[in-house]
Image (tube, rainbow, N blue to C red):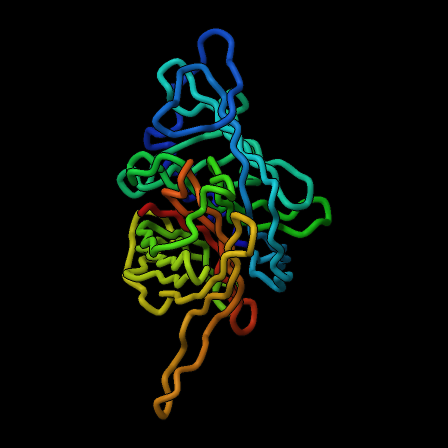
Length: 311
């Protein structure tokens, strides 16, 4: 997936001042995640999550030649360690194929903020894995966040790309049975063109309206921005999404489909990309929502990402 370019962009950004500092002091305590407002120095938080993932292959020029089917996973585990100054010193997340991506400053990983603090990018020492995680506190979120990641092909195995939503999931009993909740927030993804040549990160405004009585929800992203280097962004409304979901009876699970519209010919709108979307409520009383999506178009065009918001 043009790994040297993807990883190199983040490595250059980290080299501009985002990769140092934040060492731990003393022992580190491991705690279950409750809220971003309760973070403590010298602690490691553990949060459950969900993900959407797929595999990809590429040729010697790093052009993507194939993309696998999307799979959704529950039981994902996200860990994040905070140093004496409460800055991140280590982060890791499990993957659907039984692996774990680890970004550890002690082992040479680099972390840097991008887009004026909108997200933190991480790259491991050997530049075989990269992740982009939205900063929840800056968004005013307490109970969840999300991100995207890429792992390079290695030792004859295909590469892997994923999106995860993690946090303090709401108990099923706390999901309302009546009323309407409107959740506003953000979405971020990675999009590959149909030829497997162009790779872009995206950021968009997200809105989900949930009718708790009918157990139905509508989803949309608007004002999508795209960037090939995480520094220069341009508006790309052609990647705005629409979707519908249903709350699975007796659970804190929302499942549905999402599309990126195509051209309108003769008054009929076509579909450029389509796929599945999954979500969870977060917080003691379903105050927030988060999820992941995976869409495909023609050729190897792929759009995978996550979203989060609060009501």
